[in-house]
Length: 399
Figure 1 (cartoon, rainbow, N blue to C red):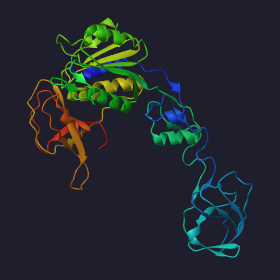
Figure 2 (cartoon, rainbow, N blue to C red):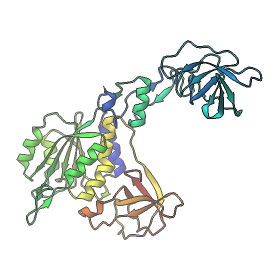
Figure 3 (cartoon, helix red, strand yellow):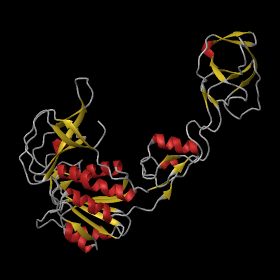
Figure 4 (cartoon, one colour):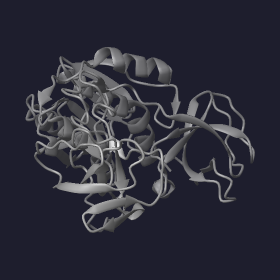
C-alpha cells in the first residue's frame, strides 16, 4: 500500500490539464480560468460621481454656486464649469471639467438657481479615473475558479468569452447484483443505489458533467461491453464497487482490458483502502470502494484532485485545526483515517469553529452522511481524541 500523500502525488503527475476553450460568460460559472486577465483601460475609465448631488467648482470663499447644467449617467457631455458654478449630477455620471468636488444633495439648500452648501467636509465624492485599476494591471489570475463576482468583473472589462477549462466529462457505472433504483422497493437481499446520487452531486460540485451513468450487475463481459461502448467520449471513468479482491470485484481486470495503466490499487487509508487509479492517454479512471462512507471519503481526498488536475486548478486541501465538540471512540489503526464530521460556528457567540464527529458504525453506514460538511483526520495509530482536543479537519464546504 502507498500513503494518501503518495497517491495524491501520482494523480498530480499522471493527469494533464484539458485544453482551454473560449466560453461565453453565461456558461463559465464554476469553470477554471485559463488566462491572465488584465485591465484593458483605466477602471473606472473617467471621473465619476459617487453620489446624487451637485458638482461644484470651488474658488475662494464662495458661499453659493450657480446651477448651469444637469448631467445624467451616459454619454459624457462637453461641459466645463467655472469657479462659482455647479451642475446637477447623478451617481455614475461623468464629472465635468473644472469640478473640484460633489456635494451630496442632502447637504445643500436650493435658493432659486443657486446651491448653498450646508456643511463643509473633506470628501470629494468623486471616483477618480483609474482608482480601481490602471490599464494593464492584473485583475484575475489563471487557475482561479470563476464565481459570480468574477463573471461580473469580466463583463465590466469586456471579456465576454474567457478561456476556461471545459467541464470534465464523467462516465459512471455503479456495479453490484444487489442494486436497485432509488425509486424501487428492494426485495430481500437487495439495496437501493445511493452511490449514483452521491457521484452525480459531487461531479457537479467539482466542475464536471455526467455524460453516462448506469447501474450494472457484477458480470465481467457485460461490464466490458458497456465500457467499450463509451469509446473516447469521456475524460474520467468512475466505477462504484469492484475495487476489492473478491471473486466478483472486476474493477482492475476491467481497466486492464480497456488498456488503462494501473498506478495504484490500495491506499493506507480508512475508509477507502482498496481505491484503484489508472490512466489511458489523457483519460483517467478510479474504482471506488462500494460502501457509501468510503465513497464520500475517496471522492473528496482523491477524485476531487483529478477534477482539479483536468481543470488546471490549484490543488485544494482546506485543512483547519479546531477543537472537538465531544469525544468519540476510535480504535487506533495503522491507517490514516478520515471520519465524517460537521463543522459549525461555536454556539457560545464567541466566534470560531468547532468540529463534531458524526455517528459512524461502519463504512457502510449511510446514515452517517447526513449533515456532513467535513472530514476529521486522524493519523495512523492515533488514539481517540477527547472533548476540547484540537483536531485536523478537511473542510468539504464552508460552514
